[in-house]
Length: 128
Image (tube, rainbow, N blue to C red; front, side, top):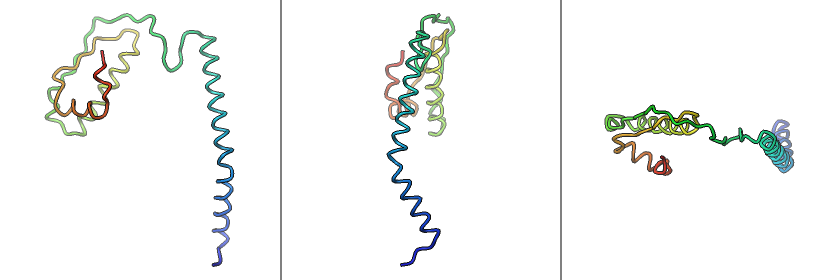
């Protein structure tokens, strides 16, 4: 069956793409290793740990208390409950990173929110 010029070009490009797949993969791997070495050298030189996880040396606990009342989750649609869950996760994560973390409390935690958190984020039970 005769093939058009456009189809021939597409097949040729596809063949070249497949042949160069290993080369692209190797370049990505080298780039990743280079970035990793740069991060390690930066970490060694600064010795403070400003990388992904920084040291929490100068943390001074705050006397402020943040209380999130979750008793109204039965009035919410599932979509809103999921958004609330994400917001609570974000607040908890940012509070952990903060230099002056507040005391973070969840009250009346049950119903849809608790089941959603159990389903999507089993690690919440280890929160302090």
